[in-house]
Length: 99
Image (cartoon, rainbow, N blue to C red):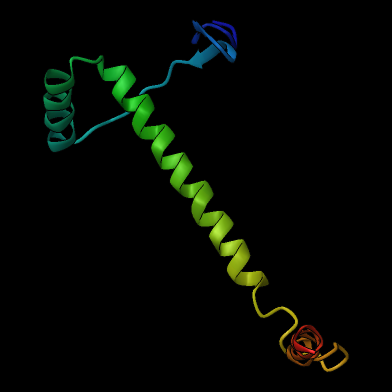
């Protein structure tokens, strides 16, 4: 068995060929039954539903990482005393526009 024995060349999409790797997942009875119900309800294949769930999970994880990065960056300059007073700069601009 070589490294490509579990590789599947998927359907061709507008973004190109989708290469997929076969993997094994253990599910609880509840997960298995819920997935079977979704297969019946949607008419889609189990593998497709699993891929969609993984895609959604990864999307949410990316969003959380991005939010975490922004939160870490917010307040980065809050203790700096060498920066200009931006509120005062804005007020001076506003005064300049009125006159």
